[in-house]
Amino acid sequence: MHPIFRLIKNSAAIGLLTLAGTASAETLFGVYAGAGGWHQDPDGHLTSNGTQVDTKEDMALGDGNDNMFWLAFEHPIPFVPNVRVQQTATDLQGRTELIRAVVLDGVNFAPPGIIESGFEFKVQDAILYYNVIDGETLSLDLGIAGRKIDGSAFINSGVRFSEIEFDGTVPMLYARGEWKVLSGFWFGAGGQYIEYKGDSYIDVDGAFGWQSEWGVSAEIGYRYMRMKVEDLGDIDNARLMVDGPYAALNYKF
Image (cartoon, rainbow, N blue to C red):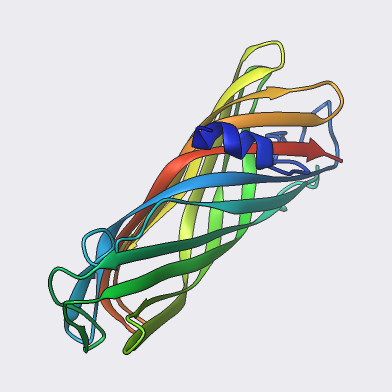
């Protein structure tokens, strides 16, 4: 089964933020929640203790499927921002036969032999935003986010084992828009971004969805996340990317 159909089948949900303005005639207060599955393809490299490993060539990390959750609250109180919280998990595994030496955090893994590897991280966002455009066909949210990152990577040969850990919190700019094209159908795009002191974080997505009359909606889309950092936990520097299609179900309470 193709990954996108498997994601549609497995996505459990309770709802996504529907872009409604603080002065909306339809909704004075709204709670929006949702969940989905994301088919993730990793790429990039990381350096720790002076040695660099590639997620594909050295760690042989493969594609994986993981989850996304979100919850938002909107209200009509002037000047008070709306609130959205969300979480995304990534847990990728690899296994390969060594054809050349691989070094993680100063630990050398030399051929011959087989290594198992893993890379996991979790991002949690707390977002404050305003509905700056709230039309019949077009809406736009703008705000700021605080992102907490927590992750690790390891290589295990059965004889030797090396693991690094990293965590941190960064501020990000937030934007999300929606364009209604037909009755119940819409296109949407959004994301978060920050760049400072050589570090950069970007997390963007685009989707096509359908909203029912009963508060339930569904969407399919594509998401791209990149992290370029210096000196984060055990990481000296890294350029890590995860992207792929996703599917989600959403509900408005």
